Image 1: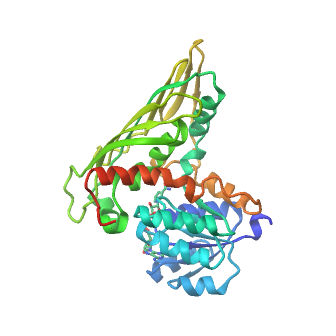
Image 2 (image 1 turned 30 degrees about the vertical axis):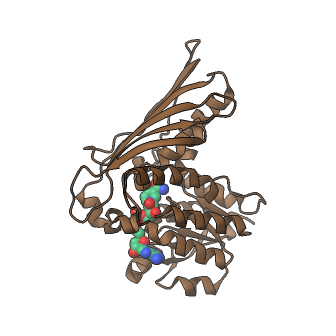
Image 3 (image 1 turned 60 degrees about the vertical axis):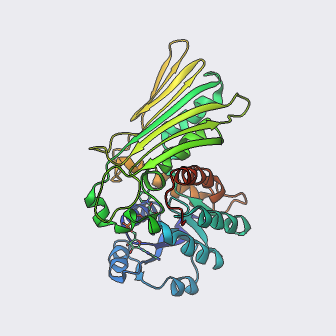
Length: 339
Ligand SMILES: NC(=O)c1ccc[n+]([C@@H]2O[C@H](COP(=O)([O-])OP(=O)(O)OC[C@H]3O[C@@H](n4cnc5c(N)ncnc54)[C@H](O)[C@@H]3O)[C@@H](O)[C@H]2O)c1
């Protein structure tokens, strides 16, 4: 079926819904409805795409004729919305993280495995040209075995951010802060690039007091990865929401015969002196660059895969490792233990 005959519903009419709407408009997908408990917000967001705004997800699902439900809600609402859509037999594209707790994330993964429809997770940074180039360079073999990897996420989330999205500062709704909300993309990329993780040691802290905020703003991790056909390798990571600006994510991978260094652009240095620079520049995008610029690519790919029999390549089961890593850091830090 062609993309232009697909019908989508967006659940959650906040900031990321705007990015999904723009991607769907560019693809020619019809947006049937935008759903939000704040009906006025739903109506206003829907109007930008000529769609219907509603506060009643059950009624929208019961009306039928929907190909994909986009889950763009706060984290604690991911599981109820995704499970309702799956129960209605509709494909689901889920914003990160899978859920605010590991238990809910596992429930979504199990339901997705059992379903006959497709479920995708928005780890859109895997589509960045720099991420694809890192993955290809490591798979190519000429860089040799990986010796070490490290990553940093030096971002800024101020009181104004939490005032606009109170749920993001409330651990019972968000499940956490810098790790689950912001750095989850980088955790995913590092485990995807370097290999599955068998050991994690980490600590998360709240260093900055912001009224109404009880989530961590800083964390540090050491992980042991098991790359296929190579000895185990260690990565280190430091992430914060207390930086004065949203500086670029850095990822460094040292290999026996060269290195990868992501600092905005990616530099691939090989032992013979060859240097290749890869850029993520997408000047036409209006998405904040610190979110990554590949939502459009992921959403287009998800719709293109709908008729194929195999699961989407970033299904809930593929998003679980990042959630398991950060949950373990929370556990080791004694945080959010009720989740
Ligand atoms: N992939 C990325 O890079 C990226 C970037 C930003 C946000 N996100 C994710 O997108 C999701 C939403 O974030 P946001 O920044 O748009 O938040 P937001 O606060 O701007 O918007 C959330 C909206 O969801 C609505 N909502 C709450 N409960 C709902 C329910 N049960 N059903 C329908 N709507 C409901 C709220 O009223 C609000 O309008 C989160 O999971 C967040 O982590 C992902």
